[in-house]
Length: 336
Image (tube, rainbow, N blue to C red; front, top):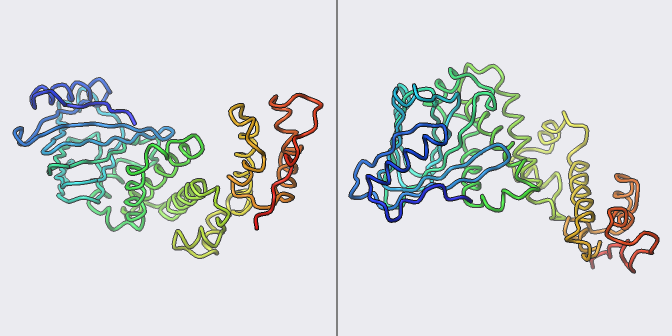
């Protein structure tokens, strides 16, 4: 997490000026003010990155963020803001659309239109994703038609849960193993949310399938180390049938179970080649990635990488060439 702004020690007026300047420097001019400066309290803006996607959280009572035609003339990036109200309540006006709602709700703003967002509550906080038109792959017309009808989307509850999880566990989700997939899943879910709320969008089914695939892939990577991770469990966790799971995965070269094994093996190979883990037993690495059977792990690793796990580590430069592997290095004891 990076704290981009903290108004501690600043008066409300100086805080608004400083935050307005910060947004301008970031390439998105926004006029910052407070509806009730006397009740403003502290204003904080935090930031996380997931691959190419950025998550911002703005905290502050009566915080108002506005983009008038003047700000649009200065800079109008072709993209959207997808908002998720963490706490407190909000009012939003974007183009002709107006809404007011409370914590837990999603909203979308076309950043090429005049807009105004205000949140209320002593602990009010809003999370925002800024997505470009190119990444989103949807037209401005689709976004504008969808804005009043987001709650009609079959992906609405998925996006709610995803945003809540992002905000609660952002630091851990940014890890190299899952950060890229989290970014992809976020983008695909946002696209599905908006497209499926627009009855005129012609590619809704394909977009929903893509979002479900990304969501499942993210789930798998987060639970990869658990031996109980099976297609049945994955389908149950996403409230779909096994048949639907296999259909969503049908466009890939590998089935779900094979993909899970492949991801576990890839992490095992990376761990064995990691200088920081050179003293860690191969058995411990295998167990930490969900493998339970020594022969199975060794066979699958050799089939995927052409050598046994201990030779892979040796060839990576962590053991002197020609020395035999340490006792037990090539086996993973079967748990009782």
